[in-house]
Image 1 (cartoon, helix red, strand yellow):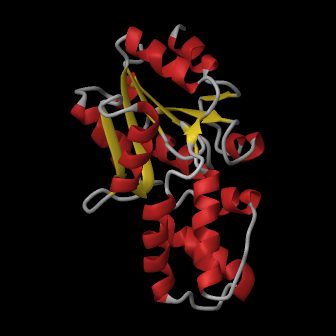
Image 2: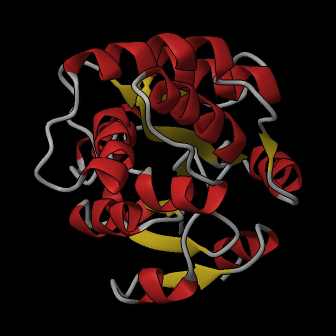
Image 3: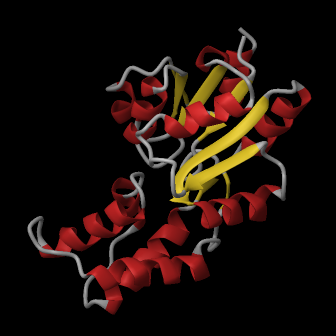
Length: 218
């Protein structure tokens, strides 16, 4: 029986593509490049902000071209100002979370977004303290696809990996959940498509948050 749901943030709980796209285009423009569109943004994110910036720049400059180090700090400054731009929960997420609370299922967020920005996003949409744990990128906690984040959350709750679900929308998420030994749910409403998720053979693939409740009821 599952006692905990551990969620990715971007593309799983919240549609953050507009904030990410706005920030990367401001960064690219600062260095004479860009813009990229929302669909390219969805493909480039998922492995931390440095990889996002790197992929965006190299889409214009080529794979061997060095990314200016200042671009990373400029991105972070812009993201602090724009991280909530047009951010909202996906359809059905609020209902899912309310149902999890009724069932006393523990909830956690594990994101490669920086800790402060992850908390900003979650609290701006759901309110303070809505999730039991929110973990973003931070010192001492390796980024996904390391399983460290989900395993840490499970340990805080006093649960085994087998008592948890890990829920995400990208190949990074599939690698993370599977590496943690946690039954993994791929969601198709986010940033990547079903084929990418299916390639990693997660335990479940769902197209609407209500299907997660069906999994919990089995």
